[in-house]
Image 1 (cartoon, one colour):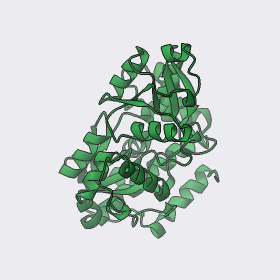
Image 2: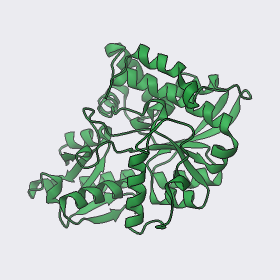
Image 3: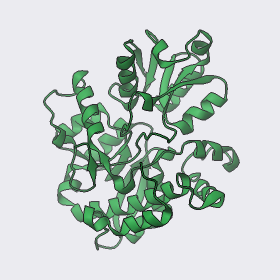
Image 4: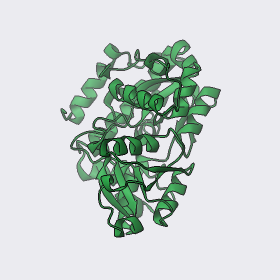
Length: 339
């Protein structure tokens, strides 16, 4: 994939009008609520807020934080949250089928050459000889809920390896971490800024990469209510334009390293306001840096990956088998691939 310099990225932003992402002139201080997780992968939102890109687009944003994807999808459907970034879940798909939600863009994506999500095992499992994902046959695998991204990643790996897993729903990421560290579950998969510190503690071990099984996996997406997508086009374009500027800054700093070490330090300072806030900055910095994964420029969406996820949900009986892709995705706002 072509690497963009900071100058190229900013130049590209000026061309976003061609893709519908140029920030329109809308009423000043339009109040919206954004859903987020306290993950480095939500950096586009955090950067756009801290650098006033939302304000410049005429949006007065409030952030609401969640601990899993499913509650965020419910909040979008109920109107408590206007826009959010999270993984596609079975619950999100079901809400889309009811006409409540639309995926309108892409966020985090697995990419060759960029460190991505890891498969982890407990220390007990590792000492028992499990050193690769294909050795997990019959073992327990943590997930928040059935139909979550963790369920999808584990299932796709198991399918590729010809093994079976026992999936354990634990509702929250923190609960999964605790269960893995104490050996109550055998395995899990998660983004690198969580995986690497866990592995460094000695209680958990990394045994493989999610990208080996799901190359170009659209890990997270940008989504909103169907009402916002269909009736609030100007506000939605303004949101996406501002969010995309945050993404461009993050990629230029953390992937291209245009600002060198000083730029990375500044970005770490910014993100620490939202991520690992319970740790001193110097302790949080390695985890924030380890979590660096490319975010989709211009919120571009890999539709082929979304289709694969939808088909998996359907094959597992987690959603209705007749849900069409266009019930889930509105492709009118951003550039798409694999459609």
